[in-house]
Amino acid sequence: MDFLNALVALLNFVVIPGVAYGSQLALGALGVTLIFGVLRFSNFAHGDTMAFGTAIVIMFTWLFQSWGISFGPLPTALLALPFGIAATAALVLATDAGIYKFYRRQKAAPIILVIVSAGVMFVMNGLVRLIIGVEERNFTDGARFLLDGNTFKAATGLAEPLVIKTTVAVTVVVAVICVAALFWFLQKTRTGKSMRAFSDNEDLALLSGINPDRVVQVTWIIAAALAVIAGTLYGLDKSFRPFVYFQLLLPVFAAAVVGGLGSPLGAIAGGYIVALSEVVLTYAWKKVATYVLPDSLAPDGLMQLLSTDYKVAVSFSILIIVLLFMPTGIFKGK
Amino acid sequence: MIVVENLHRHFGGFRAVDGASLKIETGSITGLIGPNGAGKTTLFNVVAGRLPPTSGRVVMDGEDITGMAPHELFAKGLLRTFQIAHEFGSMTVRENLMMVPAAQSGESLWNACFRRGAVAAEEKRLRDKADEVLEFLTISHLADQRASNISGGQKKLLELGRTMMVDAKIVFLDEVGAGVNRTLLNTIGDAIVRLNKERGYTFCVIEHDMDFIARLCNPVICMAEGKVLAQGTVEEVKNDERVIEAYLGTGLKNKVKEEAAHG
Ligand SMILES: Nc1ncnc2c1ncn2[C@@H]1O[C@H](COP(=O)(O)OP(=O)(O)O)[C@@H](O)[C@H]1O
Ligand SMILES: [Mg+2]
Image 1 (cartoon, chains in turn cyan, red):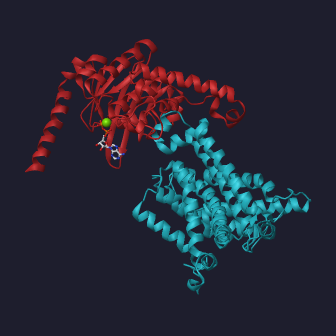
Image 2 (cartoon, rainbow over the protein chains, first blue to last red; image 1 turned 90 degrees about the horizontal axis):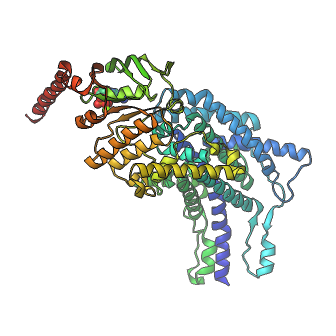
């Protein structure tokens, strides 16, 4: 029984939140990695692209709520997603046409583009605060739990509850659908193959008659869609605050780099690695330990390796370790 | 016909192409020779839209194509290969070829989602075409290999194969023979002649192997230090004073450099 309780506690506090957070990071990292593959620079504005898209989704969610539209047990934000994606795609396409294109024409070095993207990041950051303010926003509605703790305890007779929040289930399902759709797109469609070809060898892609403007536009649209979805899922699961999204840039980048920049599979693996490391290192293991260890060995402290305040340090350390020892990441990116 | 008029391409103060003018007649296999550093590759890069010229013009069949993007030139039937073979390393040899023909029905997402039949038929046509090209180039056995794993010479063949996936008008080949063994070089030579005779391709070929040039090319253009030195049949060019001097000159310079390096 104790063992089962420990297992449930582990699932409840480590595995489930880790997988949900990992899915959100993976979607964010996919966008970073696609931009890197095709446009060849690390887009610092990606975190704020997530924030912008989520802000728009929240506005539409409010609008729908005021009209009395809901999505049954699912969050209304899912209905607002297409609008957030459309607005964000329009914004990044405009940014590309107005700013990045200029530097591409000049054949600017990647580092210049990175710095330009940092500039774009600050502008977007301001834009988001202008639109929705700096306060924390909770925009989750619909049913709160798919499986609530009391039902679980009553059904199994265990002391530990297993809770599955609707937002967690939605995150995982949406992430799986997005990843499947993205891989289908990259592997099977002509445009997707052009993107891979372009990422593989730009000169040769141009010689094969691939239109670079089109590839770049499609890449921005996909990256924007992934950013909005990742941001919305994260916001549903936790809450929305522009500053937090700005900070999300670090784990998202860590995920993309761990997996190997430019590798979509790597971005997904990286997302889960970073998320699980963060959760494992900042979780207070006392509860699990008390179940599995005999009483005489029961821990005094919380058995928490790192305070949650330091969770950003986890991504940062992972980033540094990977760059030092495995600069191309696990899936051999660039 | 391609006409290059007084073309310049400078890198900083260095004049890699320094006022080159030449003509490539439709239906010809024109050879472009010259010592290393003569500016041949740079000329190709400018003509094929990879580099903008510093000044000068490129005209194709009466139309000014100066500074057009590579994919636009591709649509006009102007293709080139690279001195150092390029390939999509993560794809198979066959997939590399199947990437080539642009603007087919699979291009739009709408078609990819809702007109699967048309897209599948297109895929099949492409696949058959790619297999036909591989057969022609005698590398059918490599079809399913990853392109990053084949030899340098085979990559050169693959480059040539890319130009055969569409009905090209004019193809610029940059050192097709470099690093390729005799047998493979003969295969490449045969392929070029057949494409020229049977499908009316015009070629402009950079090559250092004079036997190869003598066998295929008429006329031959010789460049040195960014300028066109001589043009004519192989024999004429070979016996041209300035050409001999250009080759000898660099030979001597190289020798002096070598001695300086060793002594
Ligand atoms: N991107 C570049 N930047 C600076 N110099 C270049 C560049 N490309 C070529 N060059 C110089 O231009 C000259 C001509 O080079 P290239 O056209 O490759 O000659 P070839 O193909 O005839 O051997 C060489 O001296 C080379 O170093
Ligand atoms: Mg060259």
